[in-house]
Picture 1 (cartoon, rainbow, N blue to C red):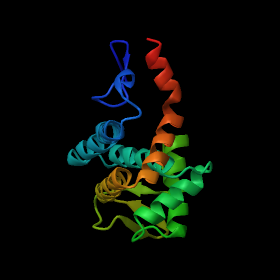
Picture 2: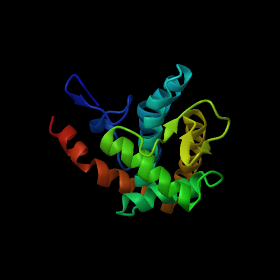
Picture 3: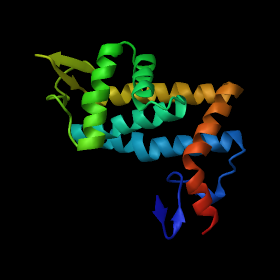
Length: 184
């Protein structure tokens, strides 16, 4: 995000002010990014009953978290892994594959959900299947993403190896942004 020629990592943290070697600061900046750019806007969209917008933010949050948490070069593998490990009560391999192809790829590449997939608040389950159609409740999906995100933050705070993997992923993905911010 850019404001007044300043590049921001998150709503509160500027790229040029983060101490990338300070464990707690980096975790807090990451939390602020995920909450400020993804989770809070998705929550606001759910509160105003915009299931498609909230669902899109949920999908890109999963994409982002899966990339940070799993170093696989295969987008498909890391998203399926994230779903089956973090929302296993709803996503087995088959449903994770469908979600990846119909929701993630459809939304990211075509701006639509494929195969009649839908976001809806009409069902009290995260994933509802009706006549072969996958229907996802974005409010319940967001709750699961938040739970998983909180668990991940606890893990990187308490497990030094997990923190090092996290730090490497952040530096890998944002190295150009960091350079750009330093050159301003």
